[in-house]
Length: 197
Image 1 (tube, rainbow, N blue to C red):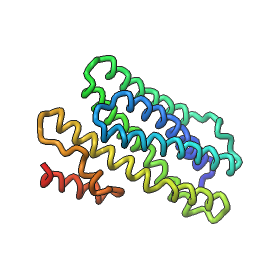
Image 2 (cartoon, helix red, strand yellow):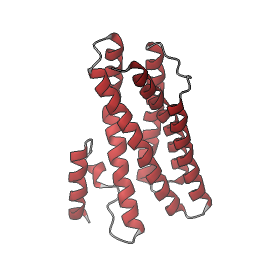
Image 3 (cartoon, rainbow, N blue to C red):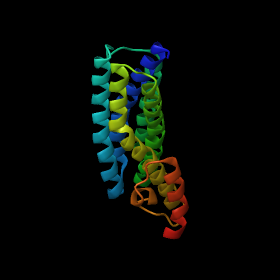
Image 4 (cartoon, one colour):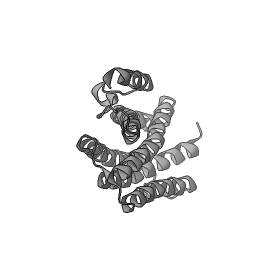
C-alpha cells in the first residue's frame, strides 16, 4: 500500500468532516421541515464526533491533524463553496428553495464523506498492523452512520424536489421509515415510494 496516499486520504477525510460540520450548521439555518431539522441536527452531532475520531486517529498514527496537503485544500474549498451556495439561497428570500439547495449541498458533502470512509475501510483490511486495527475500529464506529447520512439525505433531496414540482411527495422519505443503510435498500425505498403516495 502507498502509505503517502493513505495519509492523503486521512487528511482529506478529516477536512471533509470539518467542512461537514460547517455544511450542517448552515443547512440548519435553511431548514423548514421539522423532521428534516431533527435529522440534520443528529447528523451534525455525529459529524462532530467523526471529526474528533479522525483527529485522534491521525495523532495515534503519528500524523499532525493540522498538516496541510494540496488535496486537503481542495476539499476545504469544496466545503466552503457548499456553504456559500446555501448562504446565497438564504439571501434570495425563498425559505423552501433555500432548504432544497441545502438538501442538495448535504448530498454532495455526504457523497465525498461516504466514499472516504469506504476507502479507509478497504485500506484497513490490507493493514495487519496496529494502525490498521485502529483504522478498522474507527471505520466500524462510523460506517452505519455514514450510510444513513448519504442514503437518507438523497431521499430527502429527491422528495423535496418532487414537492417543489407540485407533485405528491413522501415526507419524511421512505428511506427514513425503512431505515436504509445500503445502496440496495435505497433502491428498494425509492421503488416503494410509489405505493406511499
